[in-house]
Image 1 (cartoon, helix red, strand yellow):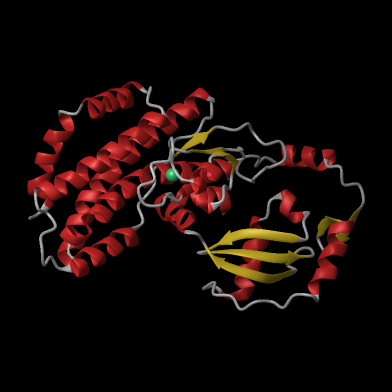
Image 2: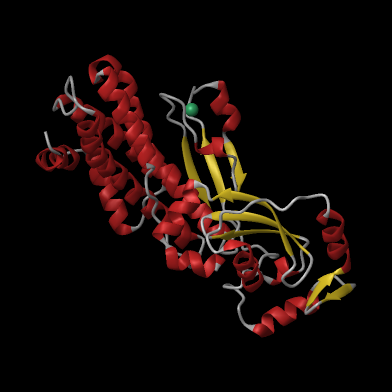
Length: 339
Ligand SMILES: [Zn+2]
């Protein structure tokens, strides 16, 4: 069974569902909320699970490759429907809060589909039907979580202070009721996690503009930087080579310098090139700081810093999947924010 044959059938079911019709209308007139998008994602997931079952799309003896192919198409489709809705909800949040930013859409994690295909091909769909159905719903719901997450990431790095709200489903477990609440970005990873049969939801809450952050993209003209410099409460600065730095920060850097070994780095341009990248891309705030966290290439680096071209890399971690996805999907925007 191939998806292109099935899709038209699924669309028929979709187009005769009142919630799906309602959501499509709300997407078009810009009134869709996150709450509705979540309800819709659950519904789409349930419909897709039932549809695959009704059409025997995952028959006994299906190979890993076949299962992967049908799941990639069908779940990719339900993910897309749910993420479109979530993006419309995000757009409404942005508009209501007068945030002049677009909603960014997420990409699903391929390894979730790979894992499910492996499970189905080795155990047989019939034997694990309930678990598979639940994972399909869960996966579709993740489109909303990913939208919340990627937009929080985007806005936080655009100088805003987004919040992430997790809502516990009525009578879900104790773990979930403890987790419910509103979080500042970055929220703990658990906020986006869901155990089996969990129908808790996440929403994006717009925050106010931060007072203390300025990326070189947001404030790029020299005059404003100069003004900030003048207004900075730091009075006592030392000049180190060509760079000014507050005395206490410089002292901090020097005192930390010998406590840490420089780590082996995997940046393809090598260490000197990495220093250069750091040097060219620090914000004013970072230039004033003894420690720096910066994304270069596919890694996030933590460096000690004691002035112009004086770095010691003390930590290198690969970018998290959301960040990586963001970078792949929105390369240019990403470069503007971090480059
Ligand atoms: Zn729950």
